[in-house]
Length: 119
Image 1 (spheres, helix red, strand yellow):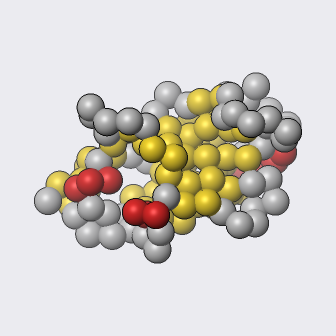
Image 2 (tube, rainbow, N blue to C red; image 1 turned 135 degrees about the horizontal axis):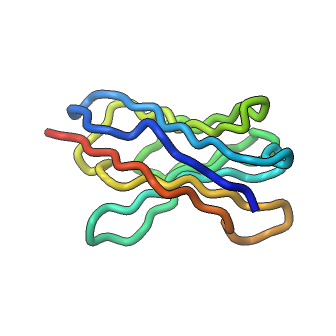
Image 3 (cartoon, rainbow, N blue to C red; image 1 turned 90 degrees about the vertical axis):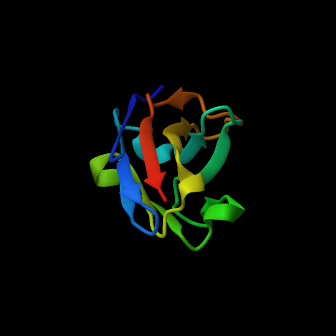
């Protein structure tokens, strides 16, 4: 298990940008696939983005492609989600999560950070 702490959420106007950070603990952080999820009030959780341990072929939810970028800095045990051209529909609590090698599930989760985009 890896402990995860998100930061960087806040209130931003539509069209603005935010960068979320997720700091992980432990010496095996670099072996995890890292993901970002979000859940808006009253809605199902969405799988927003993911980056493998190798950093290749990141995954993005269709509605964020071209606007969000996921990256990782294993020297800092941190994964980032750069969010540009934000829209009110991006408003949600954003969570980062970790999936171990060979595992089908994201088993470690952060506490979440609120992102609110005003119109």
